[in-house]
Length: 302
Image (cartoon, rainbow, N blue to C red):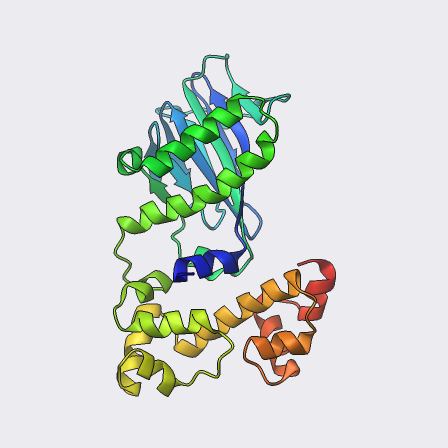
């Protein structure tokens, strides 16, 4: 398992394709902020629209483009040039997906809309920008992504047995392909992804990802990066934006979150597995991170 696989697994990412949106004429549709741990996405099958984002950015989306909102921020989708207020679409049920329709049944804009669900405080999703766009010009040469989108559309249009489960499984795979395509054109300068592309620091970060519960020291991490202790600390903080201990603690807490939800291990066993000798110290740090004690999170279902 490589580092990106590890981060995706830690995020416990699940995809779902939720809606088919078909709009004719001038339209505007508001998307309120999502709850923590939900990242909506939109795939433009045909037509053109404009996304107006909470930071004031305006992004034009064309046929084949994919918009992902990793933090679930509010956004408005409107047809190009439209000045009308957002309206509520007509909801049509009965197919594999609900259809949100504005205007007639010959849409100028046709989209597949879904969401990725992940564990809150995910290192992976937290390292992504407020929004990212994968342009059709970037993935048209990628047979995998093109085939997956075509398959999503085909399943959404049909009434095949098991279509709902199949679509959601495809949606989960879609995240990995979006991430892969986005990373292929990025040169991260800071954060988790920047660590992974740094020839020396990546060795220390990969070591932490491979064994978060190990009794790491600055000396052992610096040795993994083949750097002196002082040089390693300066370089790590500059690239990651946080100290090695800070990032290791985030990693350990995310692993603990998964173990609390997915295992029957005792709190002491989980504390030990994520590198804490004291259950009390582990519980204190976990509550600082997630806002509730580990036992309470487990009993509430997270």
